[in-house]
Image (tube, rainbow, N blue to C red):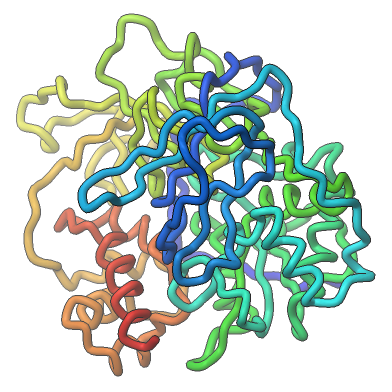
Length: 449
């Protein structure tokens, strides 16, 4: 019988624009790119030049500090640009795709028959290693480490998030192969979080049923409620969509980075799932699917809480399987601002009468901050939406003061910036909490390593 985690703290934000379980057609992307900023903890070293011909699976760049970690082309074609910013920072490596994709051959393999070293070598050579992230520090894992356990959450609970049950249809064998490969990398267990009552059955792993409001689907909840991280321990995490891609490497012997991307949001005319390849242009996903006559839209690669604002000319980030489109709100002016009554306004408290309409009412929310920045208020508002056994306000203050001992005692090794997304949403002080946590983790890594 599966273990069950039930959380009560959290918040489900019901937005208008949820996708139907249908497949949509999309324009073919005219270019693909690897964006180094997608991968935390990487110092890119470019391995190609403009004009080079590559296949899907050919190396485009490596990590300067760990050259065994490779980043490969998602498609075959010609390298058309290596874009750089200040101090020659690599911004992106762009590939113009061929009419049909030609793949590097890595060979079909049975992951359960491989040694951990052979599995690592296969993942590294095919450019799959960056999918694996480590806790603490929430960065690309080191191949030199052996994780205590590996955690995967198949429950997407963020606003307008995709349904993994739909994503994994007809890909069950690939997902199982990915689980088998990961199981060989740890002497411990592979924990897989699933929605309570889910019919998903996977072998060789520890199934944990999870129920409750967002952030129930965050992998940190799975870690915190099953086997918390102690100082000196390392665990790995990976998104379930990426497990499918890893499994495909073993079952087909190629680096096929295609995935289902869900298009959502109140400002879209079509909502559903699109078969795309990581690194495609945002334009190819949203062209012809946005409300006409509206110029002030915010396109987000990811969900509204943790995603990044992008333009149509940007590229789908490496880990993202969702595009959300909401109003920008920069042309909206309200008399008396927040004090104006209305039936379409969302509030965690009972400030507006919309709470009488029930918890499942759908809202159209824009990107406005709705307030001014001020000092952090110790009002326990974070605790209402933060289900981990951690004191969020005290941990944030320890991070700002960079008090390493307090940070360790308050649980910094277990968390990731996404765990504080709801705290940032309900925060009356309008503090960039996720950035504080991200910067704190990166500074701590440099200090401890």
